[in-house]
Length: 395
Length: 147
Image (cartoon, rainbow over all chains, first blue to last red):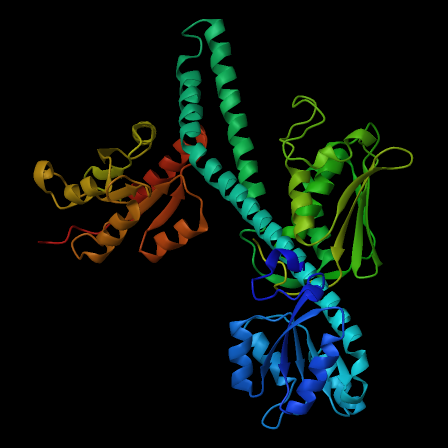
């Protein structure tokens, strides 16, 4: 703090002009000690502006009136203790360093005081240490302020992000809901046209009608998928301990049609029991195994699912011998509506992996696509080994 | 099973949806007489035979949309189910909404079933046919309350 800018007419003593100003609140019931401390303070590098309080009420009133840079307090103040001042400051919402200046303080008490939030303590018989303690306290104060500012700005950003995510989800939800009705009108009536007027106009007209029907139907499926994506984490609430072997077996059963038709062999190693929210983990497996079957190569599909534990999380892998993903697309496949093939080559809207990523991220995990040696893809994703019951509720 | 022709009231503000349902009812096995109103206040006037609806026939079945201008479908349902003269008329909610909240609150209010409007023409037609077969062809319906 620079004095030249803030100096008032009363503070004209030239010798103090270059000293940084320091407002000190002295809490001391012994006038002699008070004088001693003050004279020690005035020897130091600060221009001292002191204020004094003896009782707790006085302290509260003084600290409210002029917020000091530092509080110097005796430990034993008769009716109360110097450490009680910390509580009063907390009540007043003030974060001001407090240095205890006291007679002999036992080791245990000293440690106790530091634990309670005292910045430093100086014994009355070695007041020479006061300037150093002051410097330390001020450094401590600015570090505290800095941290508080950083925390506040982080909290603000987190809140902003959460709000914008919530807005986006709300938007996707509302938009897809409200879009459905007019879209259904287009779809239904072009279908009606196609049914009732096919062959009655000309070939060109039939083709146009078919395009319109196709477009509307595709748009409907996109909107359904967008809705499903925006619903991730919104509806499922029950977290329960679930056997992942069961989840994977149920998923394989759901995909039995495609598995039989392609002759695929789907195997899995021993999988753990995890805390899982609703059907979310099953949804992830459903999309990953479903993709492995859909994007199969010329040979019979072979899909292996495994899990390994590293530290506090499990890594699941779903490996296939399918057509693979070029490394340059390994990230973009997780973006919603991103597709690497035309609809005639492989059907779908490009939403499955986006849903997987959203689910995995909501559980604090990561998901990646890696090329597999000898062709094919390995998807791996992490999942916390123990998820606290309600720690990650939907936003 | 009805011995006289069944009377159905459709409450929907979207004429395109009304036409689809009327069309689908015409293709259904049981013949019905259909009346339509386009908002909740009209629906209540119709059911109470007020004003221009003084000659209206009490319907055997109401197909009720939820999001309606003026008086909302939920309010119509709540109103119907709290009036002795109307509460025995079966009400099928027929709405675009698939929201759990809408489905659950409709049953809470006493809806007799909830059908979400299907996205494609063929599903629409078959949903309406199923309703026609069940409510007109299969279910025993109550008689009108004597006033």
